[in-house]
Image 1 (cartoon, rainbow, N blue to C red):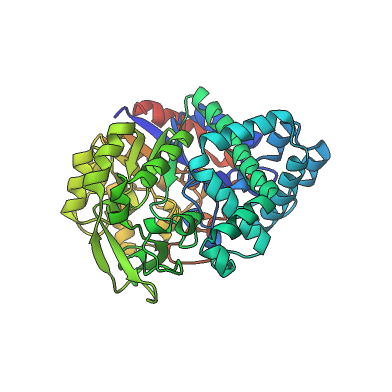
Image 2 (image 1 turned 90 degrees about the horizontal axis):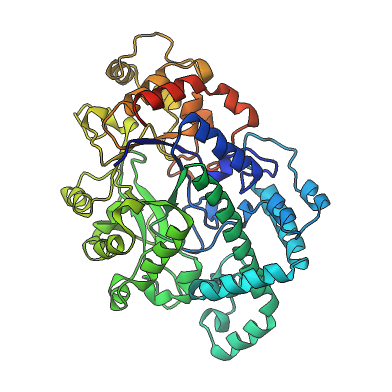
Length: 498
């Protein structure tokens, strides 16, 4: 793997004018800025429609995009809304956090205006997009139109005859809702085209995009209803068991995620067509794809749907040894990163090594008293290493959380002798030392969360696993770039041939 460095920053965290980071001019500026610092990759979080707690990992479809990311500026450029509409979408509240309520209300109004003004060019684009991706978009647009029509949050609120797909009723509804179905196809087309504009801009600047694909779907996702045979649900579309993890680094009670589980014996009959199509579509969106919860390809944890947490469950055999070789054969091993964190199983490591997909290592996980795989002296070239991930505290926040003994071990490991390790912002030196330690390591790719190049503390953390509310809200400010020690980054990225 060629030595390189990337930045981890969710789209929603990028500064902008609409209450949430989106596919805007500001995002292009951000990409231009990190290119100038020497970064070669931008890693983002899933771009799908968000679910409970605004989590990008609780998606209502394995394909759909989050319409909150569609930029009003883009719609204006396409002659779909007016300058007044663009100005009405400007947010004047707290710019340090995403305001999802404002973003949803604003997006709904702006997209409705765009649809009112749809022109021949966008009708043609929508028709082409709809035809090309009919294998998922027909079902999804119908599902969204029904959610709107019946004013419910999930398909479980549909009338019985709709829920169980009475063909006569379905034909009537598809005719009655034809315009709204087309609206949702239009929105997905806008999302795809707006994102393609951003990705093309990044690629032209020499920045590759690392995307993130959740392993599972929400139990009320579109496919769980319309392709129910592919999932382990009962006759009323309620999961028999759900996904999660046993007690681990993040949570002593484990985590009951609640995601729908796949019905692998059924999927196998058509050679896992649904999964392969999902990966194929996602790889159109990104240059590289991080496979979330990779260990589930070896074995996955199942929890009774009535359980309170993840302390009691069973392990089931995954499909990795059968599915992954076909995935790699079709798309190439260089298109993937394996999120194999929290896996002590030799079988998982064996699977990662056999596929050749680069595994992940996280500096913050390295200090449990053992000479473990997350310590930089154990890194090898075919690895993607992080100071921390979106699920970790920021490095400065983490240092503050550590007990004094462990913190001394960390500072000793990075050969940090200054007593001012806790100073934040541009003047921070302890996090710079951690970053340098990773940059000089043998790892092929180093990824640094944006909060760590800023030297920010735990108040800017992105997510706390197992906590339902208050996550996925951190946003950059336009003046945050002045907190970046640009010379430090440029010099060290160059020095260590990144």
